[in-house]
Amino acid sequence: MRLLRIGPVGGERPAALDREDRLLDLSGLVSDIDGAWLAGDGTERVRAAVEAGELPELDPPARIGPPIARPGKVVCIGLNYSDHAEETHAEKPAEPVLFMKAPNTVIGPNDEVLIPRGSSKTDWEVELAVVIGRTARYVEDEAAALRCVAGYAISNDVSEREFQLERGGTWDKGKSCETFNPLGPWLVTADEIPDPQQLALRLWVNGDLRQQSSTKNMIFTVARLVHYVSQFMVLEPGDVINTGTPAGVALGQPDPKPYLRAGDVLELEIDGLGRQRQVVGQA
Image 1 (cartoon, one colour):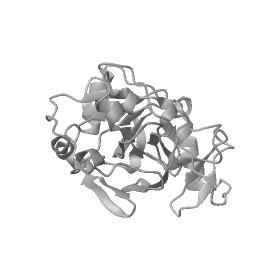
Image 2 (image 1 turned 90 degrees about the vertical axis):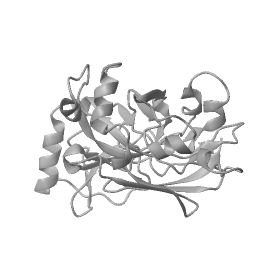
Image 3 (image 1 turned 180 degrees about the vertical axis):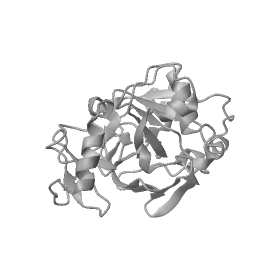
């Protein structure tokens, strides 16, 4: 299934797309698409209603929100593609590099991305996002880890490189500025993505292709990441893991690096997961 949330900020309603791309209203079956719902048995009722053609059709929305109502946490993986490690002159990690992103960075896939005040090095990162569907605590193996995945979405792990790398401390403050995690347009349930390591991903800035790769080039697979993270923290339904970005970010380009400026347009896509478009503004 493709699940989404439509409507104004704070007033989103749950919806689904059927196989004919018709937008269907889920509000009669579920109050919202969130961790509590993912952890329950409601997904099968929704699937049955979608397949039976029982749901009312909706008009195209003015806005698509993030497909998950505010995640409990956003766990990010750094340097998970060898080419990205090379372009940023970092060593290929022996274990996954973990950092956190504030949950209130999550916005809709086409919402405005704001350059923070005092920023001159705001950067883009197309990533596969993993949404957790059941509690993952000390998961025993990678097969069990995949059973904890509710589905997948596109994520733009927007980053401010000076804040992240030049101002001391951890990476988090360069990752948690407002609007720094467009997510969606849809949550595609895990049964629709039999192999998350075979997804092509691309990002354009002002029409220029900047990132083009495949999740097959990840250093650590989705299964490995969910298993690994669960050894250090409890992953709960609705949590998000951003699985890392391939080469092509502004940080890895020759000087002068083409960091984002107000008015720039970002477009992202991952096979089977839809497409995002953001116009960059100024905070």
